[in-house]
Length: 125
Image 1 (cartoon, rainbow, N blue to C red):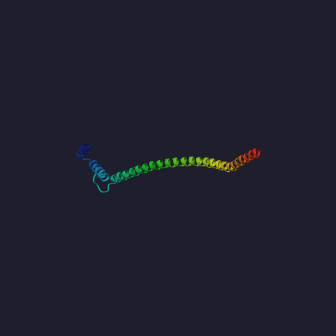
Image 2 (image 1 turned 180 degrees about the vertical axis):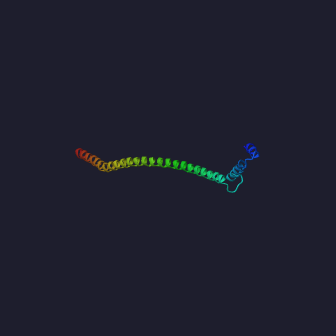
Image 3 (image 1 turned 90 degrees about the vertical axis):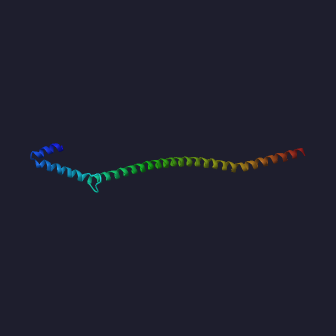
């Protein structure tokens, strides 16, 4: 392109040469490898920051999903333990009632045995 523009410049077309210089100048202003604040460098830096933010957000989202899964597992465990607790309480109530009934039954059996022994002694005597 430079050669074509040079040849055009030799033929007397200063406008083409001037356009080339302006394009080179604009290109240099947009991107300089070691420039302080060219717009393209600023946009590249901004893009890198945005990419880093995306990476961090994705990492946090993965961590959030992992914690949410743990929470769901814990909730399921709690529900299972509640069901077990209700079953154990029901069993405990049953055995407490059984124990309450057992005591009078045992006393009744003891008294019946004592009465039978007393009757046998009376019959024998």
